[in-house]
Amino acid sequence: METCLRIQQTVIVLQIKYEKYSTNLKQIFALIAFIFLPAVCQFAQEKSDSKNISNEVEYYGKLDAELAPDLKDLTSTVFKPLAVLSKYKFARPLEKDAAVSVGSLYDNRTKSGEGFEILLVEPKAESPYFYADLNANGAFEENERLLLAASKETIDDFEQILKLPLKNPFYQTFPIALRYNRGFKHPNLKTGERLVVQSYIAFAFGEVLINNKSVRVQYPFDPTESSISTSDGLFGIDLDGDRLIKYEPFSPETSYATKDEIIIRFGNLYLSTRSIDLTKNQIVMRVRPKSEYLRKELEIGKEMADFSFVDFENKKRSLKEFRGKYLLVDFWGMWCVDCRHELPYQLAAYKKFGKRNFEILGLDSDEIEKLEAVKTFLSKNQITWTQAKFDSIKNLIETIYRIQEYPSAILLDPNGKVLILDQKQLTGEQLLETLDRILPR
Image (tube, rainbow, N blue to C red; front, side):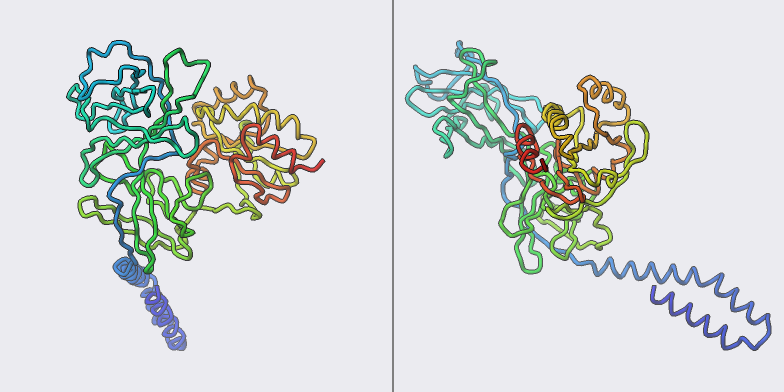
């Protein structure tokens, strides 16, 4: 670009210098500028870009030797009592007084997630344990006996990590966290049935050396693939140096990507992951221009940036219209079970606190073809607050705030500043308690 400017300046100087000469000579200068200058500028810019790419700053790191289970996103399975054990072979006889139940664990190593059988054995005088046929030979061997460790929280809680064999260039096993509460009772559980909670997602963690500082990083992992994606899934980086990566709504330390090499701000640096080589165990991160960082970070006490949207009546609206109100901005979707679970509490808050200057704005994540079904659902449940159509806020969800969890809510004050981001204070009965404490009477 500097080369282009110098050429332009030279042409102008020549035009001025020879102003006293014939019109034909001036026309020649004009013709040169018109024909050749754009081509020269383009060549100069391409050369400059090539130089910048070759001089791009990179940082390198390595992955941890083992994957880590996601302990936040869990699912549960009902184990049923097993009366006949004759079809199973055991390396050691079971305790005679043991209660035995059988269930099927979700297995993310397969495309379908089809599970495998696992036994829960509960001797009366000993801690419970699992039997998992990891080598699929039809017998439960000694190394397939998984003792459950007592939790530090309560005496009835037990937990353990089950490591499943994995075919991968780097990782040998895929971890599943198992949790069981021996004293748990539920009206839907029949006699002898047990509820076992498991993880089904795992993350690849590692360390990258950035300006002589070892920084913790997190990557999504798909056990059905032989590589780690740099453009799809949940990415994270430890920003405050506590060796933890905060995986929660609106956390600046994590960001969800959809076909996009995610950029995360690290102090004054803007970084993305160029590549992850499992055969060499090498992470390569690169510095990106600040202009490419499109995410808007939310902070308590800071104003939430204005945005426009189209409501369910096809009217163009904006966030600023709600100034003067305490506003709950709710990222939700009818497809989301937890979102639907929150609606009765939000409805109660809407009716109870409307006179105390409270309003709700729903940012719906349902695809446009589901719009009529969503309208019917809302009408049936007497939900009347403003809703934004997904196609008008798609960029807001996927790029600006990178919503990674539903529902996700924000409470704004009448000036549009963020009051609360903590989801515990904005869900369930706690939402009503929070609003009653904060809203003017």
